[in-house]
Picture (cartoon, helix red, strand yellow):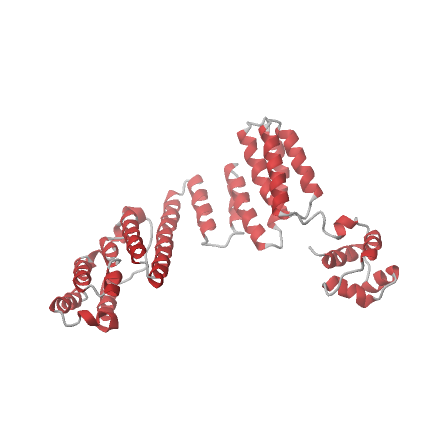
Length: 347
């Protein structure tokens, strides 16, 4: 928070208008207005009078108790961990609480302290650990009301597992609603919650969806690396990435077709007629397995959209018929035979 925002906040808490504040300080109302809008800053000699008028310290007015650097936060967290490792949880907890009181507006500090304070209760086998629960929960609740959406999402994730591990499933469900629905964090959390509640069917489905989405994401990243290597002229890296994509398709049981077709584009780029035709022949042979992942045990609880095989085959055939990149294959009898086989497969 900047000084202008602080002036506006504490002026309103005092019930003062800009004109009244200006009168007390001997300045104009437009000057106060400019401070609050961040257009200008009060003169250094005005900081103490403003703080006294608003009933706050100069540190508070200047946000000195809010703005901690990442290094300073890291040092505080390291000290808390060291105190925890000494075995006196209560002393470490009290020290941490004083830091949150010293820097009440530093949400990043609170966000990173909460999981440490929570996890060390179990690590140190603290007697009567529940006596600390309310204070940790209150900190999470404050973070969930943050104006910073990133803080809210981090807090929601940590708070969700805080509730889940304590068996408070209704609270966990409530916190889950704060996360963007269908997001990675939401699905992971929902799967854990369904598992805890015995709804294994839904838990399986959500985890399988995460696994399938993970394949698509990783394969997409590999495509990106391949494209960079192509522009860079790094043929060895292109082949390396293609091999990795083939291995990935095997591990994730995406189907033989998807393992084979990865070699087609490199062969086309090199205008290697023999390899391109061999790959195409393999692709045609494996067309029935184009959607074999639908039958994989890895995804048996998922509901895939109904993509008809004849449509997929039609698109593949049209691509081969019309793309300029296939011109060097067009007169080859084997290529014409492949097109005929695809036409038959699409009927």
